Image 1 (cartoon, rainbow, N blue to C red):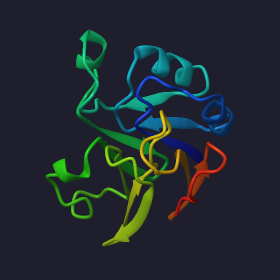
Image 2: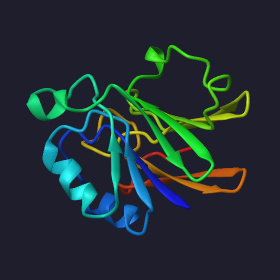
Image 3: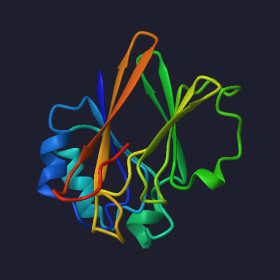
Image 4: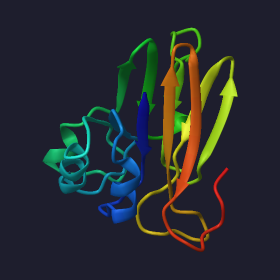
Length: 158
């Protein structure tokens, strides 16, 4: 099953992101969404789970949770905006994947059998960081991650 991972759109949903997310079973947005219109556009592609980021403000954002658990098949995904706010042992809690945003830096590491993924920033270009999102492919007992660069000429993602 293909899951789209996106974060830090800051109100900008690029056409390249829409194209990259087409065909996903669901989309996870790890915060700093920017506007409710971003969520509406993503929901036109696939069901969306989203958390509030530190820059998400207003009534629409207040309705979003600070963290969320997404169940996909036999996989449990824990979503929050800032990894520094993680206050649980993901492996002990039974999570297979933790998805965060905030740093704008795409990353993927496995600790204690848990995949920690930051899809990077898919919104306005910041500094010299790449503009990316990620694709998480889940199967029985397996998880693979692929980063998608959305803007030509940016440094490569991990």
